[in-house]
Image (cartoon, rainbow, N blue to C red):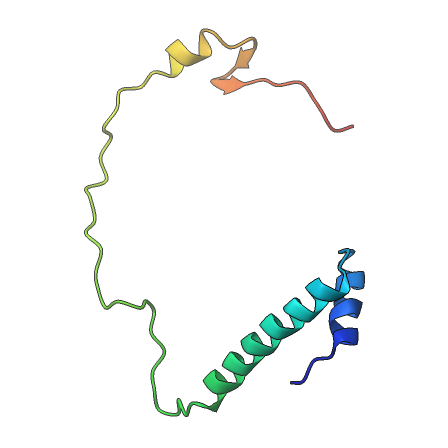
Amino acid sequence: MALTLDDVRRVAHLANIAIDDVEAEATLVQLTRVFGLIEQMQAVDVAGIEPMAHAQDMVLRLRPDAVTEEDQRDLFQGIAPEVEAGLYLVPKVIE
């Protein structure tokens, strides 16, 4: 995909980004490189290759699902301004 300076300026305008001619030319060069890389990647034949779930074939160790801290709810709610039925009450902010 060939981009022009007008394309870069138009995208900058749509994104509400102020860009001068020097920045537009630099951005055009960078975008051209990115699109060139994308074209190279799309040219690779991946037929018959199964997608990977992760870049490294590894299994994470799982820890036991056990409580490791004591219940401190009463301590924390004791300093709260308002509590009801174990829940913190907060002021309504949306009408």
